[in-house]
Structures are given as C-alpha cells and as structure tokens.
Length: 166
Image (cartoon, rainbow, N blue to C red; front, side, top):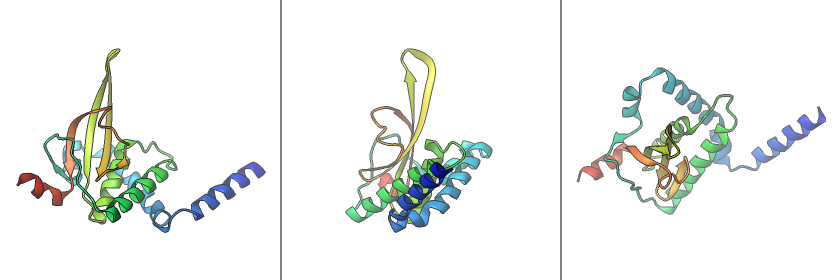
C-alpha cells in the first residue's frame, strides 16, 4: 500500500512540474481521445474524413511554421502522447491523430495528417496501418513515419488547401 502511495505522490509531483499548457489540456485531451476512439468505431471513415482536413494529393510535404508555432506544436504533441498513456482504452495512432488535429486547428496551426501502410515482406498478408500528424518539422503524433510507411492518404489543414490549388 505504501508503494502505491509513493508512486501516486511521484506521479503528482511529476505532473505539477509539467508546463501549464500541458496541465491545462490533459483532461480535455483525454476527452478528445475518448471521442476520437468512439467516432472511429461508430462513424464510417467516409463520413469522418471531411473533419480531418481537406483531402490532398499523396505527397510527403509539410507546412513551414514559425519557431513559436513549432513550440506550440511540440507542446500539443507532448500533451496528446502523455494523455494517451493514461486512457483505459487503447489510444493508438488514429485517436491521437484526431486529438492532435483538433488542437492544431484550435490554435490555427497548419498541419498534415497522413495515413500510411506497410506490408511485412515475410508475411504478405500482414499489413500494418498507421496515422501520424506533422506540423512544420515537428512530428506531432505518430513519430517520423515517412521512412517506415507508404503514404496512402493525406489530409491538410483547411487554410492550406487553397495554397495547394494555386
């Protein structure tokens, strides 16, 4: 029992030392992860896709950000990844990408949400899917996945969609 209390005290101390941004967003991101996970199960991808951003040509590009925007994108990625560890359900890459997309949209940060696939060369029927979000040089969620997955879908922040057409 004392081990449990010591562990909880340590977790609380660690949480108190997090930046204010992360402490303020933990509960809302936890709810976003829950909503994202629920939507993945009850809504078809075709109906969910328009809310992820504007579908774009499959091209591995990322929008440029100012240093301040990159800092905010890093904090968003940090709070999403941290909170995903503490959900009682599996908050894998797709719910994390949805939560990150919502926060990046709220802060007006340009982002690209990618979907990728990878086939196991030893077991052709074994296909892995992955979703990740990048903003500038910041891999917000899903890590730097370009070298590991073939991009099969790409959604950009709505303000970027006009830039792509010109």
